Length: 492
Image 1 (spheres, rainbow, N blue to C red):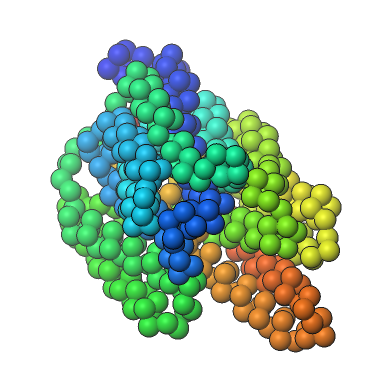
Image 2: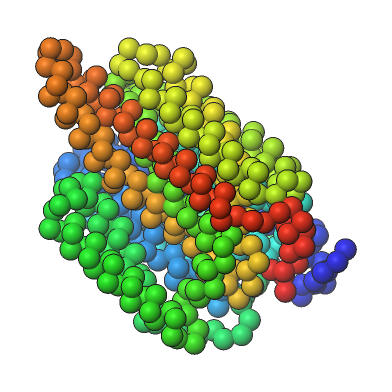
């Protein structure tokens, strides 16, 4: 085998006996993170009653987590590169376990919000370390494709699983278990990581870019918060505009700093390589289109069709099943055809699935109008997630693996925030306009108006996915030969 590189124990990287156990541990950690992005959505109504959370403050149950997570990912990736990915991975797991336990016993809304923010902080350490560990462990192309297949299946289907788990725990136990369930799982994963995960870290200069840390973190926080405020107060609100302006200034300063410092937080070489740049743009668009789909379809099922929380969770099961099945297909096809022939048709198929959702009305059925769309979307997205994870790390040096991994997560989180804010505004505007022009429906107008708002949002989501297909078509130029030729690059 060419490019064989041995670790400290003498195993050839990518063929070490523990590599699949390592993947199991990383898969558990990724599942925890993805579940946590959706598991609390169904629990919010009961948490509000229990802790006296107002309608104005309820969004902080979700936003406290996403703000901390999205704004600290780049720093978390760099810390993992320098301190050691295994060490930071375990610290992230244990910290996440503690923060989840704190949220599970929260007696006030302030304590709940704080615990969610802490989950985001430790998640920002955990996520880039997990992806970097896969890249360091699997260097044989076919095995790496399988590993990314598992990772992509969890990333794509985990949000739907979170809705099912959240609905089950909320309905039959307590909303608190939506947080508390993370604690034992994370502790078990950290124990397994001690045994099966091998340490790796960046070589060379390991100084921290403090000005870059401050401007990037503050800039990403401002951008994420601005999108959140746009969804709540509107795009023209003074607070929204102020945070957008601050984000532009801070991120511009960050780029200027990164061009000049000797050891930048995010080396521009990470994002200027065309395949990685296309991957990050693609991830941004996928996050924008997909996050909002879960939001609006969940509202349609509960508010319009009258599904219970648990039934709503199970209603997303076809999406999860499609992701898992086609992730296996994608992992087999990736080494044979390369990433572009999978990703571009995959995004087009997912966009078509979203367009099919525009047929829903308050009088249409779940099995006839929702299930086919979920299956088409999930099959398409599975063909995107696995190659996208691989191309985002194409040709990256071991020194930058963590920060490149963090960029993929950061772009998806920012995309999710942008898409949710933008499409929530689009849906609300369309709902209001429909209600104003269909007064003849009387008291029955609102279900039709709300559904119309959802379908307009689905059209915009589909347009975003089609735009993503165009981006990937022009940016990605890795062939199957390149995947083979780069075997062992990360190990070096």
